[in-house]
Image: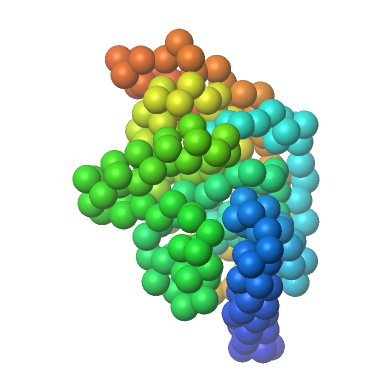
Length: 234
């Protein structure tokens, strides 16, 4: 039974990547990139949540519409990718790790749509990615979503936050909207091969104004965001 579930999960995941990215490539011939990204992400995310039997309990959903903004999420599980893809509003571009760009079909689609790929192990290239994000925000008026922990938690506990989102907020003046994912680690920890079915709670907090922020005050704002995450995780 476990082998059957394992096969089913990864077969449908692979199929969904092939199916929705193929449609995405076709749509790119007729529609703007930002519209194609939203359509593919929205349908792909919902498809994988549905076949994984994961339901979402949303709190503060109205805050998703307060854009443009920098959405920041805690990173509990592989499920986070499905959740954020299904939830985020139009005109939102993800910042993903560079390794996603090497995945056949998915990586080609991400590059074709201008998704920002960050090499988190190379500070200078990561900085270039942040500059790219700043340019996209200013020129196209898009929102950005990123995970300031950088990678999935191995223990279920919140990891130290990186400064990239905070520098980006100072440079663009966009508000930061925290999105806290609660319960995804219990359903699909990094040590597991397939998710359990169940519910995940999502807390979308009101925007944090950033126009008064400075480089010197970043540590205080990192602590503020960390506190928001922890209050929901507790």
